Length: 324
Image 1 (tube, rainbow, N blue to C red):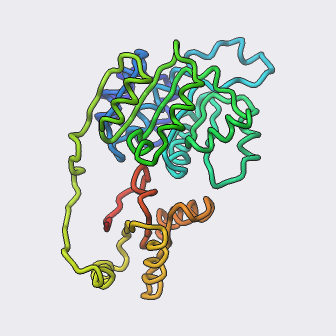
Image 2 (cartoon, rainbow, N blue to C red; image 1 turned 180 degrees about the vertical axis):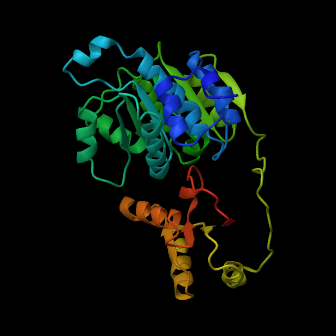
């Protein structure tokens, strides 16, 4: 199967070819035709399956096909028509980058709206012509409360990592946002690693006869990942971690800690033992989080210590090792 056979526009095919994407992943092959046909979609797909393109490509196609010629002569700013909600700032930034990359040959304008940075630049973006907003729920509600954003023309809503958003306590925020969106003409796409009862309840409340696509069995182990368990006393965990990391000090490793304080303590400990290490968690500024992730992706640091804020959606190619 090819992207062309899915009925995507030439401008999107060109962008995909430039990025070296030759053929769709299973979730893309299953989801894109359903979205293009206008169905609501409940999709079970884990990080790393290509799910961002599964909703971004048909969303962009819809925007470019539906764009009325007279709109280009209207001097008033265009109102956004697509809203993508994500649980974390990092995922919002990453999804926004993907939307821009896939839509680089289209006249589609997008903005990323998330916390941890000033609102001024976001307000300026929201006042210009916009087609797509990628946002975290909390910051979007801040803008809604200040009447900085007009969601009255949203006809496509994407809930990315829906189970994660519910885990993080965003249910009231999601209901508030969904309550102001148009209902009659809206297409809703919900992507989730699991179809937990809460996710199904959310879908039942806000979706219309959704088609369902499940790419992985619940709690399935990702293909190609080897799992190892090391039973160890709590007071010897750090020694064991040092031993594991020292086996190949050049190997990049993502280490998950339970708390923000624990992440900082572990980061300091590893730094004292000669590792190039950075931490990423909710108490860090957005600038610090962005820099830490960029340095890790670029290989400037070999160990990234994180709370579960980084557990979903971070696209780190060919990551050799993860320690919980």
